Amino acid sequence: MTNEQEIKNKLQRLEKFNDPVMLMILFLAFPAVILATIFSAFGDGTLIKIFIALCFLFFTWLAFKISSVIKKNIKTLEAQLKELSGN
Image (cartoon, rainbow, N blue to C red; front, top):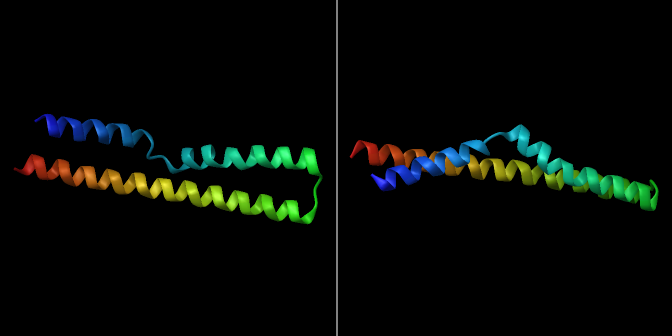
């Protein structure tokens, strides 16, 4: 029963982070700060704009990747919980 309770606790903790929109907001805040720093320090040249676009793309990819890992972990824990409940 303690194993089942541990799985339920892990599921509850992961469910809090299973919001793709919130993850996107959090992860895109970093390149926004980088963008503001670069524009204020170095100007607005083409190479800087390319770097900023790549930075946004990287952090967007990272947010999607973390979101998919969280969803995978949730599915795994739900399967384990179902297996324990079935036995």
